[in-house]
Structures are given as structure tokens and as C-alpha cells.
Image 1: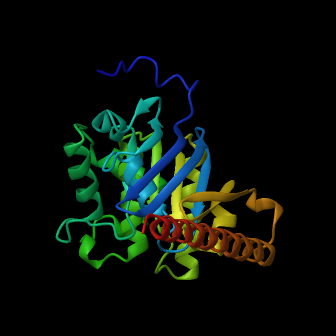
Image 2: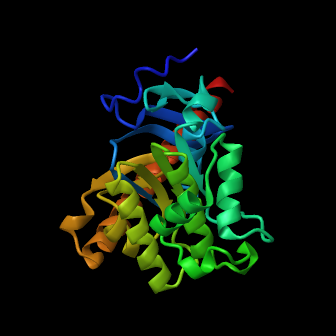
Length: 270
């Protein structure tokens, strides 16, 4: 059983992945992934579909167990103690599901109740304001909300639960430029309050606004870690494409070498 007395001190990183590997049959999803995220840090996993972003999030949430390596949330082994780890996490998927007949305020209070919190209307309104939801929208049915507005309710739930780690899956996908820029500001504000943020994305443009570190994920590995503030959008895009091409070429060469070795061994046996 995990002892809760030592993981909230700030001594350990909020999230630490060490040598994490995961396979699905013969397919390698992650191979030797290392990642560390402190309180208040915003880390973007940048990569194409199939790079391992969603697998990483599922490992952090404890929905999958790593074949090798360790995943720790506030010092807790997410594979061995997933419930304890998830108690420190708020997860906002690409499409946030709310009860359409309830208002944003009512949704927030309901989800807070599920988390064992007694959240009054005034406090719920304050949290929705911190998350960027306009006052006039808070009493409207959530069925009328845009994607960006639903995400803000999700952020407010994370604030209510005082989550140490916020996981975002393709947060700016489908948002118009103004909504994406506003959401970027909301994420930075959450980080300023000490929440660690890990987001999986392929949005090159917005990572410069939101993240203080970017990991280019390809073939299950972080092939480059970047300080996005040091590059403009054009340079970031060029570096991203170069690293993806290099990782894809190396993976193809390795697979071909393995196949040739297997064929040679089979021929020798025959």
C-alpha cells in the first residue's frame, strides 16, 4: 500500500518515465522512453499518429502496464497502484464529454461530487472563471457548448480536484485560431499555479505558446528534446520533419536487418 505522506512534498518530479517499453504483439509502441516533468512544467509530446503518444498517456493513467521500465506519478508506481496515481491526475481527452442537459456549472459540481468534493455554486463559478469560461455561458446547457468551452469545464474540474498532473490529448485539434490561443493561455495559467501538464499533440504552431519543453516522439522514442522558445515556427517545423525522417529511416533499416538475419538463419537451418 502506498504511503501518501511523502509524495506531495515536491522533492520528486510530478511525472517520471524511465526506460519505458511497450509492445503490442510484434509491434513496438514505445522503446526506452525517458521523460521527467516537474511541478509547473508543460511538456508536449509532438509526433504523428502511431508515434506512441496515446500509449504514453494510457501508461501514465495506469490503463496499460509497461513491459519494461517505470512510470511514476508523484512517486507512485502508476502500473502497480493505478488508483492512487490517478487520484493525482486530471485527464482531458480530445473530445470532453459533458451531460448536455446540465449547465457548465452543474456539470462541474456533479463531477466534483463524484470526486468526493462539496463544491458550492460560488466556488464552482470562480473555478470556471479561472478556466476561462465566460460568466454568461456558465448557466447554459452544455449541449450548446463548443469544444473549447467543454475543455474549459474540464480544466475547472482539474482545478477543483487540485490535480498535480494534467494530461491533454490533442487539445487544440478542431479549435479555431482564437479558441486555440485562448486555450493556450488557460494551460499556461494552470501551470503558473503549479500544475504539471503533459500534452500529446501534432500541432507545431501551438506548442511554442504552451510548452516549455517539446519531445519529438517517433518510433516509440523521444528522438529530440527542444526548448521551443529558442526556435521560430519555421525552424521548429524543419527540425521536426528532419527528426521524423531520420527516425523512420533508422527504424526501417533495423527492421530490414532483422528480417535479413531471420531469413539467413532459416536458410542455414534448411
